[in-house]
Length: 175
Image (tube, rainbow, N blue to C red; front, side, top):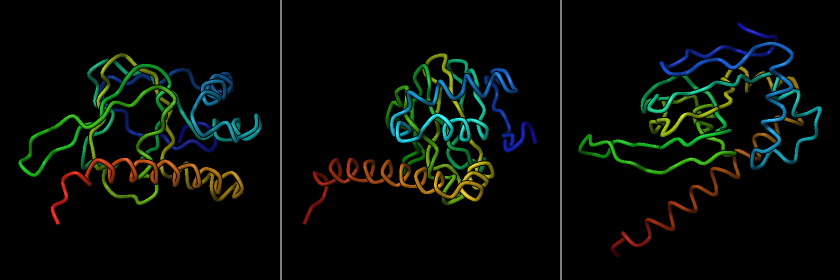
């Protein structure tokens, strides 16, 4: 275990920890202020969340996580661009989406503790913030009011994605 409250994650190749310690928490807090959905948290709450997170530099081409991996962590893209890739029924890897800065990804595995449903690959050098599943659970248990808002944010993200996918799939339904 690293800093108090932070549960370390196994780093894929091409990821480097950005500073650790008290100064890093201030940097993380500043980064989190620009994340869509986190504007509902005040400074003290962002500091609490930051105390359970780590920031990493990611090299272009690095795989942050691979479809089927079980290393659950929620991530936030701060800078750069990452792509979402998924295998189809013929085991062909297909591009699915691009994640832009300020967006959260990987949240489903933190909730259901199942393997990742897609691969995430850095399309450029990037900066990400991560929170492991254990750190996420510790946040929810330690500060339930923050946990409820974090879970509400994740639910809203998942609902928006489900609506988007259903809008795209409706054209493929034959009745």
